[in-house]
Image (tube, rainbow, N blue to C red):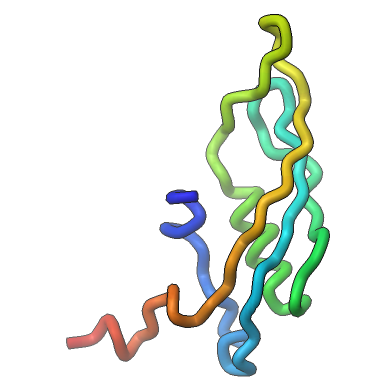
Length: 95
């Protein structure tokens, strides 16, 4: 979650239109810990989808799930919240 918080960017067009909400992304963690096949399950707007997929694809390698000592593929779902109050605007960062 820290990776997402540190790297997520609010899409400019969505911010301008006041679009907020939670995007649900489903993906698979393969046996090596890589994220594969990310897809959008539910979203308030297509304007947020591209950024949600970008951040999921950019995530560092995970620790794969193990069953009886063997790494296996695991399907995951992750909610990514887009709310303007969580993002710093240019006005807030300037002195």
